[in-house]
Each structure stands twice: as C-alpha cells, then as structure tokens.
Length: 289
Image (tube, rainbow, N blue to C red):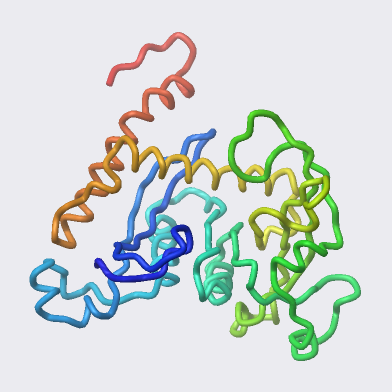
C-alpha cells in the first residue's frame, strides 16, 4: 500500500502508507479496536503486487470515505448495545459531504470535524428557502462558523490539553450540506455547525476546528465533551507511535500489516485494562489477571 500522496500535516508529497483507525472511548480513555489500510488502485489492480503482498482476492480498492464507513458499520454489527455517537476527523477527506449523508442514513449519531472549505448553506429560522434556491447561497463551513448566529460562552479549550482553562466562545449555526442528502427521505437534513472563537486582538472568527453534527438538539456542553474525546484519540495515536510500534512495521504483506496493528492494539489495551478494572471494581473485591 505504499504510495505517493500529499500530506497536509507535512505540507508536501511523501511516500507513505495511509490508514484509518477506530477507537472506543470510555471515561477519558481511548483504545484502538480496528484498522483499515488504503490500497490505491495501482496496488489492487496489479496481479504481481497482489501476489507478492499476499492480498486476498476479496480485497478490492476502496476510497477513504468507504473505508471510514466500513469501520463504523463493522463495530455496529458486532454489538447488541445501543449505538454510541461517532466522533471523527473528516477534515482531510475530499468527499466529506457524501460520507456525512451516509452516516445519517445508517442511523448513526455523529460529530465530525470537516474541512473549512466544505460548502454549506444556512438553515433554520429565516433560511427556509427551497433547496434549489438555498444552494445558490452556499458558503464555506469555516466562514459560516465564524458568522454563526448562536453564541455559547465556554471556559475550556475546544481541542487539546491546556495548562489552565481559557475563556472561549463557540459560534454555531444550523446548516444544510449540499451533496449529503440527495437520496434522503423527507428532504435535506439539518445539521449544527460550530467552531471555536478565542477572545482578544487578532482572533476574529473561528480559530480552531470546524465541527458538524446531526445531534442538533443536544446541549453544546454535551457536544464539547464529545469533541474532547477526539483529542484523547489523537493522544492515544501519539502514544502508539512513541511507545507501541505504530510506525515500526517493516513487513511486506497485507496480512502482516494487520497482524502488526492487532498486536500493537492488544498491547495498548493490556496496559489500559488495570486502570479500567480498578475504576469499575466493586468496593473491596480483589481482582486477578
């Protein structure tokens, strides 16, 4: 799966593998439970490369968006518990709008970080125009987050750890996303869009991530708690890279990559389990491994 692609973090084209991970988050802890590796068409369509890398015949090229949806569907199919909200970073995906629509149509509550350039149009009171007319008044998600018509004061960072709480202001607006709900029953879905706004000179508008959710009736405090889960998953990814071998795979096979990710995830979960056992143990009941 190694190929050349533009890395927005590095700001340049690099030779790399590109994958997605799924984390389960509980009480401030995020544990990796599933992985998907992107196989470009140059890999999936080459019989010699497939044989050399032991790629199963049933594995085909999938877009990044379809791999994300596959991850979410796979965990939903393996549990009988109520579906939990999906919190995801889609800010680097070019086809974020169709994926947003597919998550909603599958019945998932979600909160996703979207590209600031994502086209959206205002919805809610005063914006009740029919879809064709509203589509002519689209704006970027970043711009509309800066101009949000609802303000929410908050005394903590929106993303990432901080030495002390900072006064923030969250701007939000109800929006529709062209291209997300073309096949949705009952017309286009309304979402809540919001972004962080820091007070002080030189901080006009949304200065952090731009978030979109179909949980538009939930209190903003609940949504921000979910945003912080995203930050914990990012911290777990950094720990996986530094201490558990995320970046140390040197094999040449498709099954080998998955074995490596599975063992690394198991090692991380093993380290995390004592804290979970202690937190949820009945008082006075000893534990054995």
